[in-house]
Structure formats: structure tokens, C-alpha cells
Length: 315
Image (cartoon, rainbow, N blue to C red; front, side, top):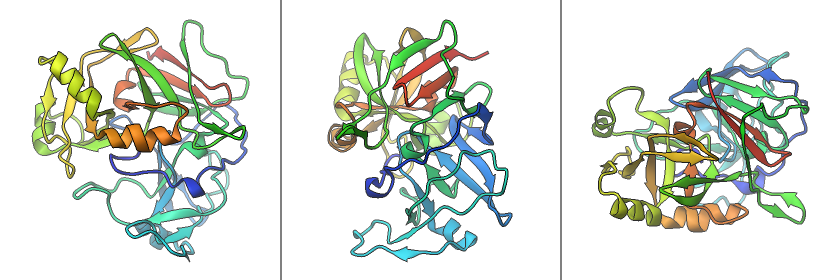
């Protein structure tokens, strides 16, 4: 889920293109556990894609203008929503990136929260990842589109993933994963694009290292309050997120199929955001999102056709 308030536009992001998988590494740049792709269009202009297993797809209004993309007005556009559609620009011949989806995508203007920096031109979300196998090597900063013959490494932890299916077809391609926190099973969106921007005070409180914009994990108000009541020793930073002033809580240990990681910061979200909105696009209710800040020690492969994720510690 890109940032805290961004949402996928399902009517125009559900179809994923067929594409070969050959074990190739993409031109990925990992920044504070967020994954971006640096590409070049067919006419030589740079374009930066933000990748997000929990998001939809769009191009920013600024990028659309810079790249000279043709815009089509959306009839009866929702107030405050995107007003135009366009298509992805053609990439340079020989680009290592898996081919981009066809069809329209929304043009989004402005930042979802005041003061948030602009880091990319376009998003590649769940439909782009769908039907393929991807390895996120967080320690080595590599994103690889695996061959169809890929199999989990010996000793890897393998967990099932849930995907919403309607009439025999996957809808959003949003993966649900179960982890254990504080002795309880917790269903979460596996969300490589979950993002926060810390206030200067929050950045200082977490040690002041790294950029203010970074990967985060997210949790519903109900669970946030439960953790806080049961563990008054767990650190909480009030008004931690720039713009929304959302709090965040530091969970000492997250158990991913027996692999333990932590501490992991979880950003507070309303119950409605996950119990109602995001759960409506999942195969079962979820309580939050597991983001890149929980994965930065791990090599994670998401096998969409096999509906599984494999984890191992990076070297």
C-alpha cells in the first residue's frame, strides 16, 4: 500500500500482462527498504517506477507532462480522484524490466500527505507482479524476476499466501500472509510498498539514521491498542508520521514461519482502513501490513502462481 493513504484503483489495474521469466535482475534501487526501478523510455528520458505488492498503478501528473503522454479525461470523475487516464510510455529497446501492462492507468496529481517528497514517476503494483515469481534480496539490494523453474532453496521457510478469487479469477493480486506477534497469529497484507515519512522528532527518536521516507509496517487501531495495553514497555512515538501525525509502535519480535526479525516499527492505522477497506480486497480479513522494514534482513521470494512465499536470511 503506497504511503499511508494511497489506494489501488481496481477498475483499471486488475489485468496483468503475460511475460517471460528468465532469472534476470532488474535495475532496482533499494532506499530505506523501498524498491524502485530506474528505467529509460524509448526516446531517452529517465523514468522511475515505485514497486508495491500492495498497490495499484498510476503515473504522476508531473511525469505525464514531462514525458509528453497523451491524456484522456475520465467521465464523471470522482471529486478529489484522478481526472485523466494515460498509458505507460514505451521503454528503451533491451530494457531489463519485465514488459509494462497495456491499457489505461490513472494520472495522479500532488502528494497524498502535505510535505511528503516525490520519489518516483509511476507505480507498478499487484497486477504487475501477478503470475510471476519474484525474489527480493533486501541485504544485497536485488530484485529478480525468476524463471518458471524456480524452487525454494534448501532450508528456506515456505509459507502459503492467500489471494482473493472471484469466479475462478484472482482480483487484486494482493497477498495475505500470516505471522506471529506476541504469541498470536496475525493476518497481514504482504506489502513491499508500505511507506511512511517521519517527522524530525520521530526520526531523532529512532536514532536519526537514514532518510525520513522509509518502509514501514502498519497495524489496525484495535491491535495497536491491545499491544500498548499489554506491553507498556514497548516504545511508542506519538505523532510520528509527517502529515497524518499517526503514532507508531516498536514490536520487539516478528515471527515469520519460525524466522524471527525485529524490532519492527508498525504505523497506526484506523480499523476502517484494514477491517473494511483493505480486507474487502483480500481473501480473508487482515489487521495490517507487513512492510519492507520487517524484511530488510531477509531474501524473500514471492511465487504468485504457486501462492507461496519463501524466506531465508541474507548473507
